[in-house]
Amino acid sequence: MSRRPAPSEHPTGTTAVVGDRVLTLPNLISFVRLVGVPLFLYLFLVVRADVAAIVVLAIGGTSDWVDGWVARRMQQVSRLGELLDPLADRLYILATLLAFTARDVVPWQFTAALLARELLLLGSLGVLRRHGYGPPPVHYVGKTATFLLLAAFPILLLAAAAPGAATVAGAIGWGLAWWGLVLYWVAGAMYVVQASRLVRAMRDRRAGVAA
Image (cartoon, rainbow, N blue to C red; front, top):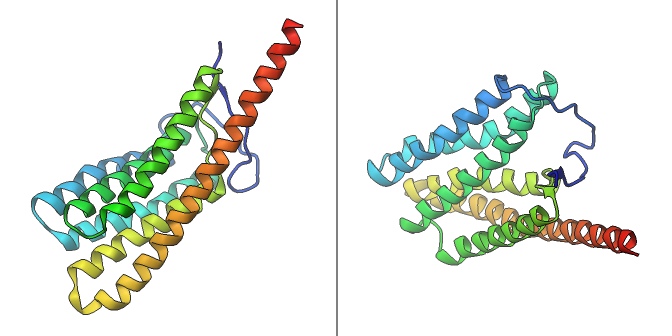
C-alpha cells in the first residue's frame, strides 16, 4: 500500500509546489540547525558555556522561521525539507528540555507534559502508517507552539545564567513557555482528530467495497 500524505492545510494558508530537490538553501539551513543540537548539548552540559549555549539556542529558534520563509520565497519547498524542518524542531525541543531538566532550569513536570504530547503524536502517526498514510503536514497551531517554545528556551537559560536578569527574563520566558505548552497540546489534539477522521474514512471505504 502506498504511503499517502495525510491531507492538511498549508501553515500559511497557501498551496506550495513541493519538489524533490535536496541541495537547496532551506535544506542547508535545516542541516545546520540539526548540527546545532549536539553543539548546544556539548556547550551546556559538558563545558558549561552558558552564554555560547544561549547563542546557539537563539540561532536555532530564529532559523526555524527563516528556513520556511526562504523555501516559500525562493520556491524551494521540498519533500526533504518538509521532513527536516519538524525533525529539527523536535530535536531542539527534546534536547533542550532534557538538558534543562538535568540542570534544574525547568521542573521535570514541564518536561513530562511535553514528552507526553510527543508520545501521543507518535501513537497517532503509528495508526496513520498502518492505514497507508504518511505524517500530516505541520499545522500553523503547531508551528506557533514550536516558535513560542524555541523563543522561551534561550530566555529561560538567560534567567538561570544571569541573576541580574532573572526576574524579567524568567517572567517572559515562562510566559512564552506555558503558552507554547498549551498550544503544543492543542495542536496534538488537532492531529489526533485528523488521524481519527482519516482512519474512519478509510474504514468506511473498505466497508463499502466489501459490501
